[in-house]
Image (tube, rainbow, N blue to C red; front, side, top):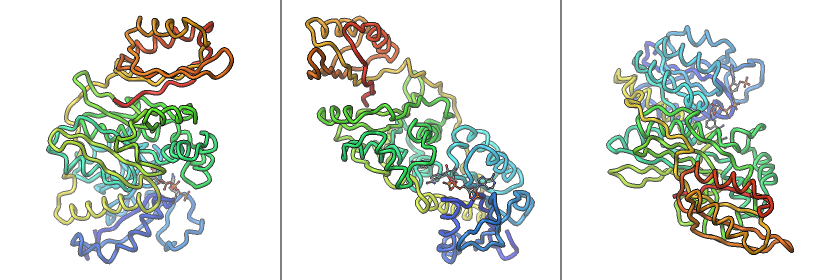
Length: 430
Ligand code: NAP
Ligand code: HSE
C-alpha cells in the first residue's frame, strides 16, 4: 500500500477476463473508497507481448516481466487471469510468499493445486480468493463458504459449462445434431478453438472438484471426478427422452454418502420439472442442498468478459476490506477432514439404454433374462420397428450398481445374433 492508503493491484493477463477486470475497475474506481474505506489503483499488468496494441489501456502499466510485480512491495493484490497451470502456480506461490493477496479465476489450477495454495495463503495470513473459477459471474463459492456455513451440505449439483448447455439446448429445441450445434457454438464464440475440455466434461469436472471440496470440507481434486462428455449424445436420444418427459443435460453432481463422496460429470436424463431442466443456452445454475436450509439454487451467466470480471471485482473488494481491518487470511481452506472418494463402479445408478435389436420372438425375453441375472430391474421399456427385421429398444432401469449393469452390457455385446448395436447409454438422475 502507498503512504496515501491506496491499495495497489497488479493484473496477470489481459485477455477476455483480464481486459474485463481492467475496464470494470476503471468504471468502479471512484466508488471503491466509499465501499471499502481505501482507495485503489492498477499498478501493473503482465502480458506476454508488450508491443501488442491494447485499446483503452495505459501502455505504461504493461510489463512482460513478472519480477517487476513480485519485487514491488507496494503491490498488495495480484489478480491472476492468465489461465493454465504454469507459470500461474509459480506466480501465485511467489506472490503469497512475498506477502501479497491473490485473486484468481483459474479453475484448472485450483482444481488440482487448490489445497497447497490455500494452505500457503493460510500460513502467510493472506487472502487467496477464487470466486470466478466456478460458474463465472454466479456467486457460489462465497455463499457456500460463508452464508451456508451453518449447514451440512449433502449434495451439490449443477450445469456449470455454458458451451455444452448451449449445444444440448440447440439439439433439443432446434433439432440440430451434435456437430452442427458445436459449429454454431464456435461461431458465436462460446466454444474455445479447441473445445475438448468443454465437450468432454473436463471444464465442468474442474469446477465440480472445487465445489465439492468446499461443500464437504474434504479435498476433492479433478482426478477424483468421473467425467464423461456429450459427443455421443444424439438427436434421436434427445427425441426419445423428451417423449418420456425428460431432458438431457451435462450434469455435475457431488454427493456425500455413508460410503464416501461420489463426484461425476456426465450427460444425464433429468425430469422436465427439475429446476435444472429449464436452464438453457449458455446459462449455468448450481443447486445446493443443506440440512438446515433445504434446497437452494444459484443461476446466471457462467462465463464471459463482464460476468467473470464481476466475480473478480467482488473478490478484490473483499480483499480491500480485509486489508483495511488487518484481517487478510480470515477465511482460508475449509478442508478440515478426509472423506474417501467412492469409485464410480461402486455407485448405484439408473440407466437409459437404446439398442438396435432383431425383431424376432424371444429377443426381448433373452435381454430381460440377462438383465435379471445381473440384478437389473427394468422400470420402463419401449420398442419401435425400424427396418424389416429390426427394432429399436429403449429401456430405463431401476437403480443398480454400476459394475453389475456393465456386466449385463458386456454380455449384450456378445449377443450379436440378437443385438445389432448398443446405440446409447445415458445415466438417469435420481
Ligand atoms: P485469454 O483470453 O486467453 O487471456 C489470457 C491472457 O493471459 C492474455 O492476455 C495473455 O497474454 C496472458 N498470458 C497467458 N500466459 C501468460 C504468460 N505466461 N505470461 C504473461 N501473460 C500471459 O484467457 P481468459 O479467457 O481471459 O481466461 C483467463 C482465466 O480466467 C483462465 O484461468 C480461465 O479458465 C478463467 N475463466 C475464464 C472465463 C471466460 O469466460 N473466459 C470464465 C471463468 C474463468 P497476451 O495477451 O500477451 O497473449
Ligand atoms: N468454457 C467455459 C464454458 C467457460 O463454456 O462454460 C469458462 O469457464
